[in-house]
View (spheres, rainbow, N blue to C red):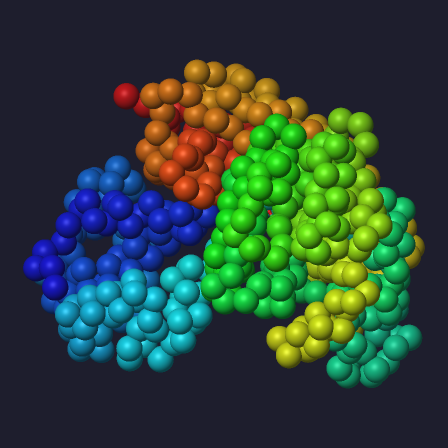
Length: 499
Ligand SMILES: Cc1ncc(COP(=O)(O)O)c(C=O)c1O
């Protein structure tokens, strides 16, 4: 066990990619907690005073104080009047020493389940992934949040009342694990009309989210230790879902036309499927060219492999029409299509869906029934009405217009305030803008400086596999009004340019 607190070790922990979306005091709290749990801060070790730690980290004292308060509340530290804050002895006793921890880590590196943890190897992988941290409040410039403040809750409320009145206690019972029929039909109609898909209601599964769909894909399509291909850079939620199923991820590079299908063809890893975001590549924003779409479909048909198409935000396309989805072009039915209402409506709704080839419907439905049964019937039927009555399309149209204006406000603000620091990649759609840092600017450092000024800069490099990582940010703008964008951008520029 370390005898004293080490500032550099804490700083390294603070850069944990999983915590970048958290508020600063939460990141400090998590970092200290992780050091205590790892045994890097042993029982009885004295922590620096809040004032001096705040000074060393260039933060407000309150930020550190909030972190200490939470650690104290959770029993990780004790605070002695006039003396300071110490790692709790009780926690130390529970952890039973660093030697055992190191043994556990060594075991784990060899791939064995850590003895004494009570977790399976898979459980340990999930634990170590740190999960996916969702942004729980509107904050500049959190990635991928839609505007929720203008959501037509009055309409929603009225439709929900209608559902309760007409269906009575039937909607209080269990529902179909595949999803309520009216909603599956509304989704199929929407996909066929708006996204160029070719699906029937029988192929739709209503789920809690894209993330649940990814978890199901990982469970059903990849054996432990086997490969799955995914875009590089790519969506961390997909990576974590596959890794937690003990899949080996084979990164496939992306260029300005989307995923490199030639590399996919050349792959010899034995992967059974590829995950991609063809309409609006996450995070680069590239659209997969038609030529590559056809090549991709041809590859899947020839090899019998699966295409997992994540169409997470294609509704928000601002320059011309969005390209139709891959699923609709795929006559051989090798595509599993994933969609979500997190962007088009609001993320707290927790509703998403997948459209699967007929041969997969039962397996996915059974897996879903094991996982969590079904999505609440009241929500599903309310959403079905919302879609049938035209509110869904109207809301998307209104938001598309709003976000297109906000994209311009954001690009103008970047131009005004951050010239010489980043180069934005003008996105054709979506809710965020990738920005590449210019030479001489460090991603980790800018993220830290911005956080101290209350601005969140989601880093780009964490989305890359391997050694070659682009340094930059993925800035969300859709949830912020133009004046909020301007105010945050000006604060950010001041923080970054401060001597
Ligand atoms: C590429 C991508 N896919 C899926 C999702 C998640 O959608 P859901 O909220 O339905 O899990 C996100 C969310 O940010 C995303 O960026």
